[in-house]
Image (cartoon, rainbow, N blue to C red; front, side, top):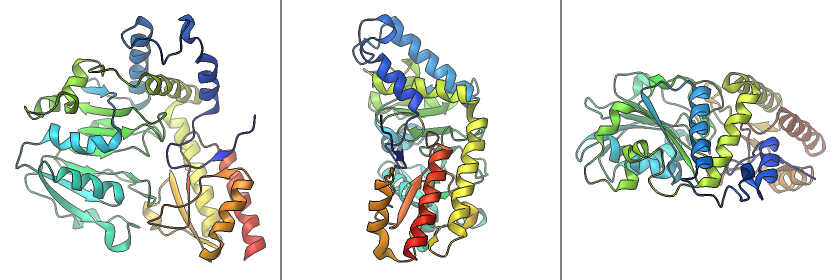
Length: 359
């Protein structure tokens, strides 16, 4: 078997141990004589899987008892609409911090359902920094404050949790489970699966129970958090395979020592990659040093004419999906939980050799 080092921003790398378990389970899951993709979501076996996945997620993130854990479909993008539909009435104001493409998209989606007030906007510097919190133009009566702790495209990350008394909502798609987080500081957290949870198709939502009653009365059933809370996320047929893989990933994380242990590994991976970039005149990272992402590391070659050669040769060396987003250019290494330290070391070694032969 030949495996590459996969630096994709998403769908992203999955742990090899998880893939091997999937391979083993595909024809006959838990002695049912069926694949997990064939069993009923109402079966005893799958209901037990769903309960175990929630329990493990709660343990990994120390989710308080007064929060619900939901597994809807639709990805983080659907939650951009579900958030205002569940937390505002028509005419209410919600505050949005825009430090990248996903924050901008979330604010635009909210504007369809409520007054979307952009309290800070980092587009003036192409989303390479986070405006000082003291400069944010907050509303006096905001229903909530929404931000994206890590912007996947630009590689900008908050290394603090915004303050204030209004409910705090975070799109943690690309940072969830990468280190400990104090869930109690948030009203709601949502995350698409395809970074650190599993394959695309399922979404994680963690929401404080007292907020479940704020949904608009005319919300579609599948756009209402409470419907998922009341049905154990089986309001309709769920994406059973994605849920199954998420369950395996949660168990893998526990075996790794939990988010505390994986956080130490992730800190090392990011630190050594940034150190290699900063020590070079050939590579640069465009993001302000105080808000660099642990998970998504963009870097630009001194001569953009070499980009295609870098990508061709890195792929030949088994280092894949390093092309940067079109809005940023250059390269981007996404180093999520399942991307090993060995993979980062291999990338650093390749970068040094490429610089030696092309500088």
